[in-house]
Image (tube, rainbow, N blue to C red):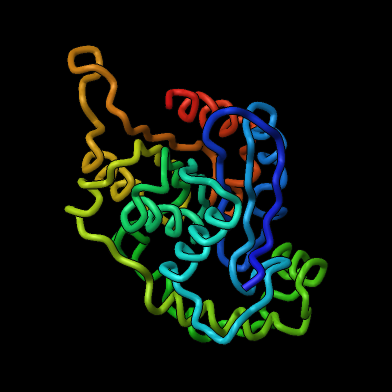
Length: 251
């Protein structure tokens, strides 16, 4: 599969891979923050199967497939290890890279991620199977798709495949989260689709929520963005970029 990617910036350290959200692409997920992050590092922004410029293939959409595709892209580019910033579905892909391809990952920034269904607000996905492609016509995601997709008529197929993924969300055990080797920064909107209690639980599993003045700072971090919804996380670039830069520069 011809995985579309863009490279921006330069730097001697590990490159940063950006992985977008569901039905989104590079522009709607990272259009504002990408140039800020690329000021000091090499940034590789990808578009996953059936998203943006990347064509669809005869294969289901799964987080596991997406993670394998990112590894394949890193192989093609000759990148041994990379930091990864993912938002929404892209954060799940980044987490899967951290648990299943640990040797390829340096640091992780996970925005709006849950490691099991219980992390989402109750009833959030009720009725998702009734979503029709035309319900999203005119949205920023649909408009981006029409601008970038090799086959603009493929929108209906993408939405249908995404509904299958939503019905079979990836899951991790608490033990898998505890065993995550990559230093991880969790980002959450205060009005996100993920419950704040779940983000804090994940933060604790990673070794966070300690009295840092006595124990020292943990390797993980937690950032909660005030006055922010799930879909407005990409609009908080001015807040996120310096936090992400500082976190990644600790490597």
